[in-house]
Amino acid sequence: MSTIEVKVPALGDFKDVPVIDVLVKPGDAVSKDDALVTLESEKATMDVPSPAAGTIKALRVKVGDRVSEGSVVVTLDAGEAGAAKPAAAKAAPQAPAAAKQAPSPASAGKRDGAAAATAPAAERPPKRPAPVAAPSGGVRLEVKVPAIGDFKDVPVIEVLVKAGDTVEQDDPLVTLESEKATMDVPAPAAGTVRELEVKAGDRVSEGSLVLVLETAGAPAPVAAREPAREEPAPIAPAAAPAPRAPAAGPPAPAPAPAGRPAPAVEEEGRVAVPHGSPSVRKLARELGVDLARVEPSGPRGRILHEDVQRYVKEVMSAAATGAPGIGLDVAPWPKVDFAKYGPVETRPLSRIKKISRKNLARNWVMIPHVTQHDEADITELEKFRVALNAEHAKEGVKVTLLAFLVKACVAALRRFPDFNASLDGDALVLKQYFHIGFAADTPGGLVVPVVKDADRKGVLELARELAELAQKARDGKLQLAEMQGGTFSISSLGGIGGTAFTPIINAPEVAILGVSRSVTRPVWDGAQFAPRLMLPLSLSYDHRVVDGAAAARFTSYLAALLADMRRAML
Ligand code: CAO
Image (cartoon, rainbow, N blue to C red):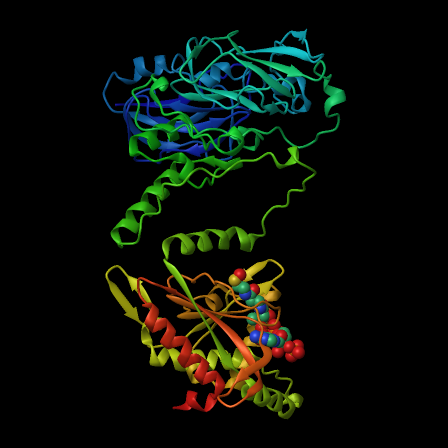
């Protein structure tokens, strides 16, 4: 057994390439050619492969480190005596494809453009496509595969544009994938795609014609295009405006990408593609995972190995708990270049929205929702509430309708325990405590604080606690524990307006009460029309747990309680 220092092989002129994924840990057994770490340059991702079979002794880099040719990434105890030497000797020839091509496709488009200022200084100048006058008056650019090192016959795995598409400078046009690297050929200038010269499955080499682009004029000189860009060089193509096609199809014997399914065409003829290193794509192919369904956690939307593993775990655990599969056979999300139709502004989602969107989407697709609408006559309750507030004005407590709603819901939940439950596989877990969540509208987005043990609290105490929690929510000061443990939720939009809506159930709860604005209207009392204050109720329930008849009984009972809160004491 001998110890090998596994080094970054020849990366062309590239220096300081970031490590975006470390795929092994000390003690791991690896085979020859297993990917050890993933590096990512401007337009290419590459794995550093193991030069021999063995056991990882130590990691010498971590995610975020920058490496260059010769940097040691891991030390490896080679498994078989004698294996190390030839394997190590082979390490350089095994250099990832992208490493060798690094100076070219990775930055071919950038060199002419603003990013040239931040691209590695030692890069060779690009071969700029020769402009030719187009009949329409524009300039025809023949976009060719830039220098890709010694590599020849690299398969085109994705064609990201079609004739007639408009592209921005640096938009990825086609993706090439060698054994160990994926690389994009970027647009050298903004323009319109006129003729596509390759299709998925074709093999290309340096100088192969990819497409003909018609630009409005000759590519502008660097300074004219973006004179003062200061941010660090983008290292991943994920931020590229052109959406890309799913690359991970079913297992395909490499190299035979021609056999892969064509990417699904979306609205506008555009396609969406997840970004992942070749080893991530290989893992996804082996596991049959559609990368388009995997939520990326890597830099700039890059899918990492752990993302694929997490996705598989989620699918497996959903299957184990009897929950419906989350691998819905849905079309990819439509990608539209909105700016084509008018001015736009892009605003990042708030932190709360980033978290809640996933939960809301899961709850909406995984729970068969039905919403039961009803109304409660709260004429007397409102009189009582106003009187109560007058009595307690000095104490600084404002009793809102919400406190009564919590009280009434607890009484209804006692009467209909299935609504205070959670589904667990084939069983229903009935909770004997009453923790009521309420949706609170905050500047950062929707949060759901929970009033614990609401059954043990009076209306005044509930009112005080609701106000405190709502204030904390608006100030962004809620603790996690204050949003956990809910058994049933209320979403009250009554202070804002509306007549009815469909609240989304807050899983793993099985029901949520939506409340809209109360209105005074004439109600027939059997002898005459009388003005009554009517409160709209919208109860969404999980139809796997609750039948429609039970939901109707629940809301009728709730309405009766709100009409006469004395019943809540019974
Ligand atoms: N009908 C008519 N008026 C109502 C009402 C109803 N159903 N509910 C409340 N009101 C009135 C209140 O009486 C109060 O009036 P006054 O100022 O004259 O006293 C006013 O509307 C404002 O009430 P409020 O919002 O301060 O208090 P609340 O207890 O009703 O609600 C809270 C508290 C936190 C629920 C609320 O502020 C809020 O954030 N609501 C939005 C919830 C939400 O976003 N739900 C959607 C989730 S799904 O996307």
